[in-house]
Amino acid sequence: SQQGEEDPQALSIQEGENATMNCSYKTSINNLQWYRQNSGRGLVHLILIRSNEREKHSGRLRVTLDTSKKSSSLLITASRAADTASYFCATDAFFGNEKLTFGTGTRLTIIP
Amino acid sequence: EAGVAQSPRYKIIEKRQSVAFWCNPISGHATLYWYQQILGQGPKLLIQFQNNGVVDDSQLPKDRFSAERLKGVDSTLKIQPAKLEDSAVYLCASSLSGQAYEQYFGPGTRLTVT
Image 1: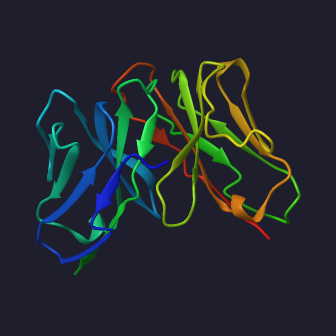
Image 2 (image 1 turned 120 degrees about the vertical axis):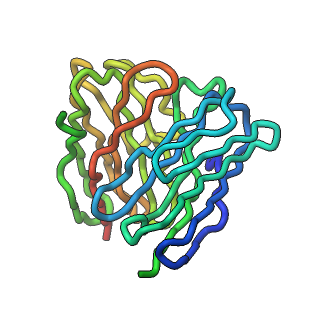
């Protein structure tokens, strides 16, 4: 079963704009990770945020985590055409044996 | 550093036939995962190994799917007999053991069952 649900399912923005994707999950977690998938490079890890962290940055990426609401958001600033991909959140459940459960994904399209 | 290797990249078989996929994880990664990704969905974990022991196979259809990891390195995933609904991309991933480690994914095997 899918633990995480991304919102929106699809998003199209102009190059240079910011993109925000949201993820909701159901059970307590150790950490939450975001991955990107495109046809050229497969699934690639972007960022990991632990359950005791509220915000994390990596380059043009900003991730927030609200464990009280069981939700996370991924912000991509100054988008580029190369950011066109599907983005998935994945949760490492509290008693999950390091198992990741992936969400349904957000399909992001950057319009040049 | 070499990435996760998978073969074949593509496979087309008829229903009721058998198929096998191979994965070579990143050197030193104790944990290996097989995922099934159906078009338009996120990856779904089929089986997780730590070294050569199974940690989780709760979502593996054991009547038709089997997997092994010999000597704690390479792994094979087999489907016998295949059904139409098995058409998907099969992804292998590996990670260092312990919490809070990212997973590294291979390019996947796209299986089409006709």
